[in-house]
Length: 306
Image (tube, rainbow, N blue to C red):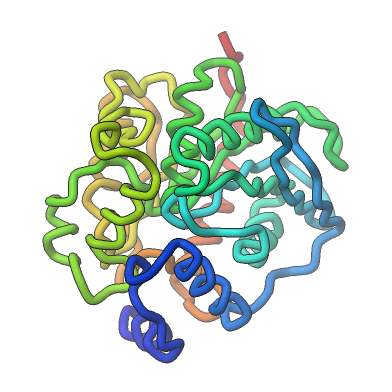
C-alpha cells in the first residue's frame, strides 16, 4: 500500500511541499484533487457564512440523505497553510454518508497570510456555530469534532480552549499534529522519502508562528498541563508517518488523564491516506471505523457543559 501511495505521488511529478512558496504548495494540493475522485451524493450541500470574531468564515455544509444522527465539525489538514473547501469536498461527503452526520467544513484562514491564532479562532467560532446554528436538520443533535493533520491539531486545541462551553460527544483526531518535537522515533525513521517529510513539518511550523511560540499548548497540544476536560476521543495514526509517534503519545496522554480514548494505527500507509478512500481498502476501513466510533459516541449521553 505504501508503494502505491508513493508511486501515485511520483506519477504526479510533485515536488516536496516545502520546496516552494505557500502558493506553490496550495497549487500542488489542488492539482491532485481530480485524481482522488469524488464523494457520494448528498441530500443538500450549502455554502454558508459563519459569523466570526474577526469577520465572516466561509463554510460548506453537507447533509446526507436519510436519518441524520449528529453534526460533525470537520477541520481539514494542510499544515495550517494548505487546504480549500474543494480539496476536502469528497472526504466531507464520504464522512457525512458513512457517519450519518451533517458535516460542517469551515474554510478557516491560512498561514502565513493569517498566522496563529487566526485559523484557530476561526475554528473555535465554527465549532460553536456548528453546535448551535439552524442547520437543515432536526435539532438537537450530538456534536462531533474531527480533523486530520493540522486540522486534528486545531480540533483538540479549540476544544480545550472552549472548555465546557460546547457539549461535544466525540473528538476524532486523524494523524494529528500534537507537538513541535522533530526528533521522535517516527521523525527519525521517516524523515525523508515519504509524502510528508520532517522538513515539510518544520516549514509548516515556520509559516504558522514564530519559533518561540511553538511550544505553546495552543500550538503543541501535547504540552498542555491538563487535557482531562476533553471529550471521548479517537486517535488515528498511519504506520509510515513522521507524526506516528506523537499521535500515539497524545492518545496515551489523554488516556492517562481519564479521557476515554481509542487509538487505531493503520498499517502500510502514509500520512494523508484517508483522502484516498476511493482507491485504498485501508482508507475505506478507516472511514468505516470512524463511522462506528461516531455511532457509539452520539448514542451515549455527553456531560452537560459546566
